[in-house]
Amino acid sequence: MVAAFDCGTNTIKLLIGALPDVAVRESRIVRLGQGVDATGRLADEALERTFAAIDEYAALVAQHPVSRMRFCATSATRDSSNASVFASGVHERLGVWPEVLTGSEEAALAYDGAVRNLRTPPAYPVLVVDIGGGSTELVLGDATGPVAGESIDMGSVRMHERYLRTDPPTSSEVAACVAAIDAHLDDCPVDLASAATVVGVAGTVLSITAGVLDLPTYDKSVIDQAEVLAADVLAFVDRLVGMSIEERMAFPWMHPGRVDVLGAGGLILSRVLARCSAATLVASEADILDGIAWSMVR
Image (cartoon, rainbow, N blue to C red; front, side, top):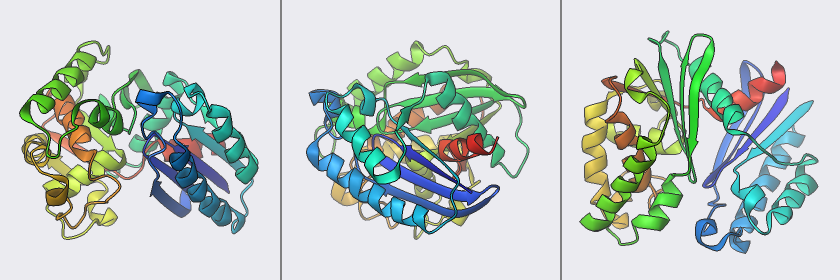
């Protein structure tokens, strides 16, 4: 049995299982990257939230016969001025040191986790879109695995803190955010237009999918593998970005830890889809966390 941890800018996730069987799948929004883009350090309160979640996860791991463990973390946990505090805290609680994946490793794991989960064989090439808090991974691949991938320094938290500072955002703030996203995508070497299938993973995509489907609650069984029109995603994001935080919280599927940054994440998703020839988006609950877990099995 393996235990896989994926610690991102906004969320920390845990998967425990004897694959393909999964015994535990948990997610906590901790906002580890709070303010790190501006300060260059992990905030004390963000570390406290993250360590509290890891303590919960350590207790879950202790309840299972785990033989291998891997803890993968965002580059902010390596590059911040107090990164050693985070690394030591993880090691103290779990007995393993956090590792920061290279761009190619991240691409391969994200692609494997997402595509392995698809119940219907996809048309290739497949583009996997993983929008995190600090970065976005775009991975294009075929039946053998990734053929091109890029990790871009734009994520829901990063772009929200940089551009969407008003509640609700002003039209000029939204325009600046879109321009920055487009500039990043202009420099991206991945051929987005060639994708025959687009698979979206992680919280931003799953939440947007819940919104497009107008769900009465956040229901993983409905969201996972759901296929929605790209045009419907773009229309929903346009509506979402113009809302205040209070108005967004009226959505019954909305997580309070994601409500403020979902607009920025949605803009990233919509600008990626606008460049793709695929007419639909497939949402997948499986993501890089699953890829991390399978890497230990292999």
